[in-house]
Image 1 (cartoon, one colour):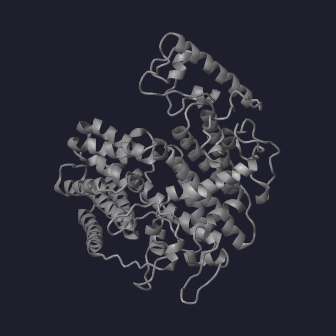
Image 2 (cartoon, rainbow, N blue to C red; image 1 turned 30 degrees about the vertical axis):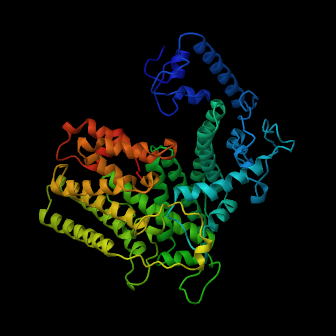
Image 3 (cartoon, one colour; image 1 turned 45 degrees about the vertical axis):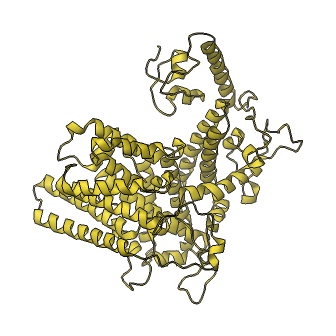
Length: 570
């Protein structure tokens, strides 16, 4: 049956389309290009262009079928046209590279005997690179370019060990190796789309194989969760921490590409592992867990801590991301954070005002701890309010008292930000800093991002306590402030670090402000690298359409869930 609303590929093939984006089920199954353009393609002309396209799709179907049977068709794996001026790192972006899932022998894994076909540039008589060489190059792409892009605030100093743990962990852990290759493959495929024209078959096959690789990776992770662990405590902690890190990395990848349907499953698995590490080991605190994971690379007498070894650094990094993900997920689902009980231990310091807490979130995501702590408290208060109201036991005095304490903390810290002076001092260590992905901004990007998150937390508090009242003075004040801040961002890409605040302010903005909200998301190109921001825009556009249907009982979780699933906006 012909499809009138589905992708153009199904329409041309006269097949019913399920309209799943970005790739419908028909095209996904056949591993062919899914054309989901908004406008009618030029080749749908009812004449020669349409006929040529139909023949091309037939060849795609045939080539993909051969690929599924294990026969690599040269029609499909034809090298992408390369200008002589492009260097070898661009040539390494072969679709065959994206199809590679075999780790290199340098990592202790079996080397694939296959070579890459169809990748000899006409200007070079040199041998074709092996899969293992290209895999290593893709890992370096991730380390040098994609990791800093995803986590621009994470810049540990040389004395802390830098980011070397990323490479060490990838080389020593099979799951992390495959996950990293998948991440890098995706980013390279996006780069190909923007830098190299044509050969959509190659790109589509790479994308489909990438999705399968991600699924296989999660299958391996599930098997690891079910396997009996080693008896030695250090080995148990290291193994569990690595598996947790792989799940968090998987989740962050899927969020980057705009796939949110597995968020809850991934988050639940990662949270379970984190609690197992923190509680199952019977160790008193986070620092004790880190100590059991091994000795630091080196220590400096003048400092309390030395350089973290790779497993310690990785556990700190992925624990910080997990705390944030769990808190934002709670906000998006209208529940209390599952890891709320660990906030005080990890994000505060009750020993000395001048000493850092175990995790300083501004070093990982650019937002200071106090904002995330208060957001967790608001989520818990909102869940308590709903439960008490349902049971007919809501105490308004207690509700207002708890809300006032949260509001006071947020306002006091915002005032501190306004008077804070940048006390960072330059030193010889600055000579060795990695290229900074963050644009220059007065006071620093972390202060800017923290201020945006804090005003968004005040919005969230107002809705949780007083209901959905976009015209109220408290909400209008914070909407105006956040809009002003977002429009003063020195680089559009910084929106990636404030996706949740961007979404909540968009849901509460006035009709006259809609164009301003759209412009921010539209400035992020290519769209495929900013999945969370695009999803936030989709959510707020749905809210705008239903403005007249929203009541005072509406909350932010209802807006997020309007799409039929929970979107983790991080």
